[in-house]
Length: 442
Image (cartoon, rainbow, N blue to C red; front, side):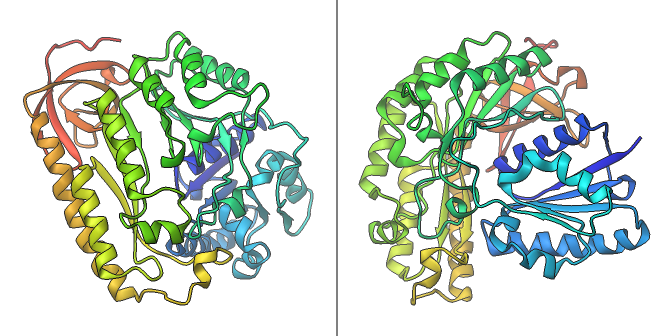
């Protein structure tokens, strides 16, 4: 039996794309392999949000060259956002690759792979975008485990932030029809999944391009009605699109978890303007206040960039002040990385690397302290923990409704169940707890 292995870089969107690639391969009769060395087909699904992601992907392709030499029959392919950005450059930097295809060509994998197997030396297919009048395909997905699943509800992005390459590689926004989303969620419930995460580059933009027009709040209500699904999450939100209606809906629906990922990127209005984020710090804080008014227990996480072109020390300090003011439960942080083709890459006032790294270190230190301050009061409280997997060193690992990771003693049979847990220890990123009952519920 032929076997495959998919290597994934990047965000949850890429993880979901890799599940689609795996599903397509399994529909062709392939079985998964745990290691590239055991596979007949190896696909590298790439990310390009930052320069480091590019280099990691090219580095991995370089490592796989030796495997290709050892196994001449191995089919080595590369897909994803890096391909969409670099195009033929991928062929130059990785001439040993057999198959190169972009994010808009994932559904074409079976045909492209057959072309390779029929003797084409190298197969290259990268579409700029999917035709507007062509419906979004319903594709298989091979998901591992039976606890959490990702569901794409909107593809692409219309925001064109000056630092971001996503609109150029993933295209403009296209919402998945609600009936199609609900059908996928029903199938997941039938398979035994208990939690779904609705995905989009700007998930709050969902539905603006559909007729009749709908929105994410309406979609959440429909997904909430699916029997068997116990928890619903969504990501990533844009502050401009986080409406009062959406916040109230999250607060009202018992299955929707009280965790909002709301990237702010900077705590300075001038930097936000140059980023083309279309909101001010005051706007952002009003949204945070609305979330906490309706859901005092909610966790709020964010993305932050330091060293954006022209960022002064005072502007960076404004970001630190915002982190303290909001009290984020977690921050995904990064030093600004110029992406070719984006507007910010052409700005003349680029910040030097030493300054970026100094600011990034200071921000990470503060984010860790703030996260610990948010977690410390949870000690002694009881939390509903959905057990996701067995721990590497015994016990089990799960998450609270607010997306906090919790480790506790318990049998592997608890995976997929909800456990009432008393928090006994708190760190910045992980809680420790003990089950209040010997048997999990759910």
